[in-house]
Image (tube, rainbow, N blue to C red; front, side):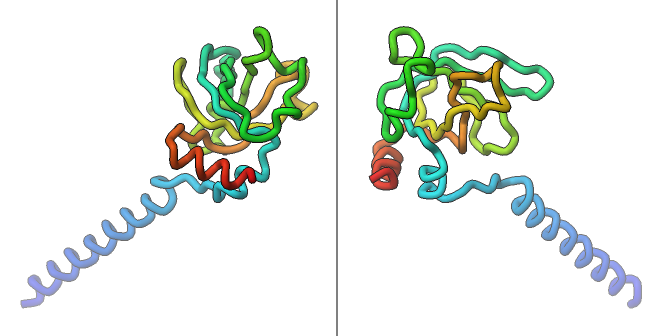
Length: 155
């Protein structure tokens, strides 16, 4: 009789351990903490839509890279992007910070079209990132709903 109770107790103990492990994994590994859209928009000086044309400046140590992005539309901060920042006749910009571990959705491929939340590169990142925009928060896929939500925050 004691052996059956011990077996049930052991099974119960393992079940508790497994459930706690799954909850811990969902809590700490399965999700990336991201600020609300309103906060992300307010902390970015420039919000734009664009298509990644070229991936460059790969840093093998930090696993970060920059991209040349064709700008389709500025949702915020058009005047912040000056002549030194604009490339190839004024419709492209360089955006860095892809691969940054502090930004959840930070990976792109050539041809990806996204909503970018960016700021000018701070002076401590010069000269390698001078006149470059830097990702400020996660990229957003372009959908009608996402565009409407971002436009609503910008207004």
